[in-house]
Length: 188
Image (cartoon, rainbow, N blue to C red; front, side, top):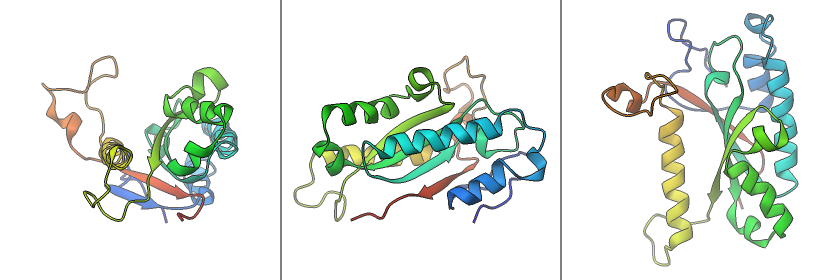
């Protein structure tokens, strides 16, 4: 279930909120508060196309959704997403399928596919626990990226987008907002 955005900030409460695609659509596309939005329905359609395309190339376990689409902003530019994909499945895929995943991993969906989705990839690795025997570079990459994106989606930029999010404004690094997790397929 998606909690309501904070009326003062327009942001979701801090944390990762598990929900369905239908709940995202109800809260951020078809909700009466967005009836006059000129961008949300088109962005949602692009999101659905992007998900369907990525699923032709790799097993997608979940997506984390953040950015202005998950706020009270009436007309966001796009939907920001980090897809959690099965790394073993990716490694078994053909070169053309891996190239599709690369489009998503390198945030080229908007420019190359003309879909209003800013995307990234976390390659999920089946690892019993961090630093267990046999822990290697694939597992290290997974845990590093999972932590990175969890931290990133909880940040709210205080400095203009034209400036890097660095001091002198340390508020750029403080967790201030929540994000959504939408499941697609079970983990093995």
